Image (cartoon, rainbow, N blue to C red; front, side):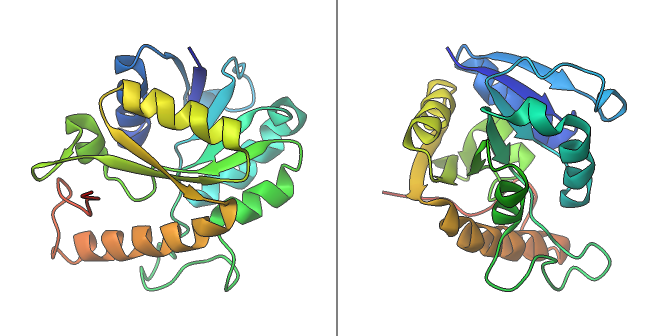
Length: 192
């Protein structure tokens, strides 16, 4: 089984950890106050934090992330206005992270899911689907297998370049929820 270290113990971190643990994966957590001092024991490190916190995590851990799979779940929203993304046009948070971690295998996942839909593993009457983008096939296969083992669905959506579109979907879903047009227990579903 794959081992995971989740940086962040908020709703998303706990929901992701719950799915992974339900599938038999070994999951450990690093709290906000432990960043930089706690060991990253997992083969996969999940950044379950707001996008503005990512730079500090990369600074704190730097070379310790070399060779690891790093999963970016962020939606790089402008949290002051909720009307735009804060990454360069055509880029993504995942691409910015990958540029800073050239020796890591960066994946984009979980950013189109709400914690409630991960926790229940359903969106309405449908199984929650985690969309995964990345350039390393083995890393994507390990994550999608762990998610599927935990009772949710997972789809490999292609290269890390697809993170741009995933972040657009995440942005849309969040703005709908903030404007109360969509509940935090709902969201987009993939129906095959």
